[in-house]
Image 1: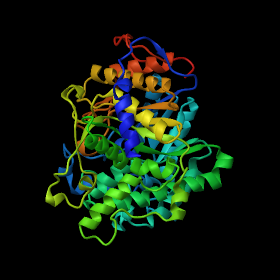
Image 2 (image 1 turned 30 degrees about the vertical axis):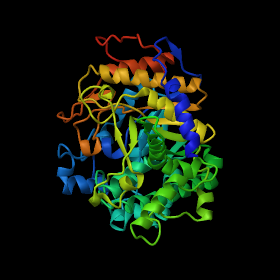
Image 3 (image 1 turned 180 degrees about the vertical axis):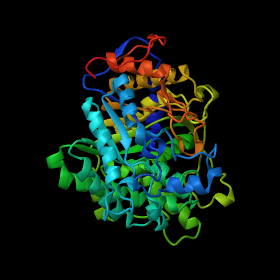
Length: 508
């Protein structure tokens, strides 16, 4: 496997980068466009109408120093009360669909289905009905990082019982909303949930259990996803006739040189970072990627562990997981150069970083604007899509997040450039034969950006967080994205007239 990818890297490295093409290019008929948000990042009303505490409520209230500007999502965009304005913005853009997430604790305050919170159900019913009123398809994410604190107190994603807890929650969601929602995403970004929340302490619940916690989380999360998928497939699909899938964060990891060591390092980085979650679902063999199992088992033995720190799947679990996604949900933001690196500090052993054993860097010219969160490498996006095609027999892909952070301002030419070139890379991938069905811009509007708080802005619409009205204003990128959706084509030379207000097209 490794040798095959070494040869592939050498053969196609230059070819896939390509040269930016700025002629007007059409998107395929039926290609879908949308935007995305997440419940904790926009809703606010953190303890209103029966909602209980989640892990982000707990962390931002007890450890405000963990957030760059010591802020929280208590109010955020106040979308719990302003959802009609949100839908108006979607109509202005001309969206085909809107991806949002449900707050587990707003629906099930006890974390369990013994009591369903009517006020929470009404909120999401109102949002869904408002979307459908204007022919905007809802794409509902069941879990976008905001685990009930009560479940975290019982171990969260490291407790195998979470497979049952999540399945019960999923069944409630399908029952409540599946008559109108035809796109469900079970879980958003497993890598961030497990590696950043349980391995290191950059995201809630910030456990810092390196080398052990992230792998326990990974197994349980994958099984919880599979259980939720099987429930929909067996109990709801025949009547609701929808689609259900999982959304992965996948960046592209490019070898820093043509040396065997760096080629192997880049291959391992792709296997550890995203194939850890995609391989069990989409590969012919299932299970965690073989390179990952081999490296962690060897490291564990060297460190004196009686068995691999990476939990094993049973044969039954492997088969239970395989094939449990109607689409390949892809969140993509950046790419990195990778080289082999064995110099991990002693205090970082054991750890995911030590198990992988690579170093990474980006080039200065990849920085677009003032933000360090995202990097501008459109050719990496194309390579990633081709890798998914080649590894997994070209599954249908839905881009469920893509975007760039700025530091505010209406004239966001950096974002316009980013979107245009990444959409161009997507069109290149379509020309390569990749089966991409839709694209989701992150985000509809500025929101609470996790540990960055409100210091980073991803929105097509700027939000004034100093105003009690949380005024939303379209950026230049909103005008440009609207034109892409209206014309169903990418025109790098289009310049919007920003003196004219953005309006809702007739019929939308």
